[in-house]
Image (cartoon, rainbow, N blue to C red; front, side, top):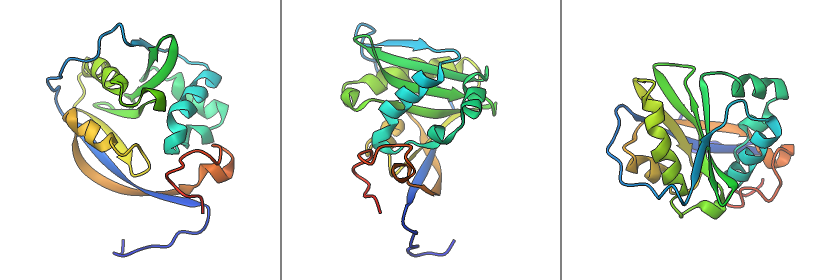
Length: 195
């Protein structure tokens, strides 16, 4: 790839993804009390429910990959026994999602992780990741990895590093803007202008 700026055509998004890995369990500070949040595993979630929570968490950050899948494509992933989905709830409302992908063992990917904007800064993300990481380590992976990008919450990279994740790779992603394809409302991701 050549150095310098590369102009994108209208309707395209570009972001820089940073990949991070964790190769051994880390000592963790106490998480918020269980009384504050409920975490449960969801096996074979309904497509409507899954897409709803995916949008509720991801729309501000322009998550679109699962929204572009057909029902059959998404169902094949969600029904796979190597996909572990955990949901965080507060006051009876689902407000956090963590999805482990064990299909490429001995590596486990955190495929999706986030909380709704209402829960940001309240310890919800920390509670979800801190309570679920030990569950991933039970599968004895070589590493757990995740990627975050420049479209994500500005504190995402710092958050993962606090958990001991170490950056190891960068990539540039170019994609159609999901606000222009109709997968997300035009009001989603207001920090990224529509061109």
